[in-house]
Length: 49
Image (cartoon, rainbow, N blue to C red; front, side, top):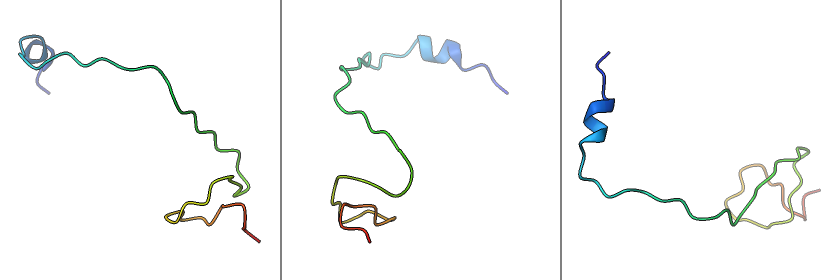
């Protein structure tokens, strides 16, 4: 395997900065969710029977 760290240090790519946390998603299990997403692959929305 080649050492790539020296290549990363000499790049002219602009530095990346993170913004503050705005969304926290927690999986509680049991296929329960308070959102009604059309793309949900487990049908975990509030109208699940």
